[in-house]
Image (cartoon, one colour):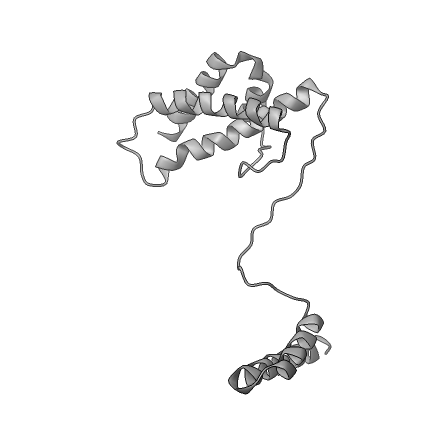
Length: 155
């Protein structure tokens, strides 16, 4: 089913936007892709990309039978959108005249900020001086734990 969906997608892009053949060919035979639909671009370029992207996705969605798809499979338009961004960027590169900066993505495992251990140690020291009771005790314990970690790391 995924291959059939991808084939419909490629045929749709070729039919609606034949000028994007360079990008389509790179997607079909290559291993480079721009993931997560992350970009920063000028407003005019964004509108051009959006028009391209949503016209293709609307047409592909119209042609696909959703009844047999898994929950993960129902997210297919999101995956195809990533391919469309890649096709769009490949075409911009082929045209030339655009400054394109590529950066690595980062995956954040936790929303807890991680501070440099030495900075954390002194931060907990200050907080232990400014607070009272159980909170003060907790900051002292955290400072002590960081001191032990630093001692182990220095061995």
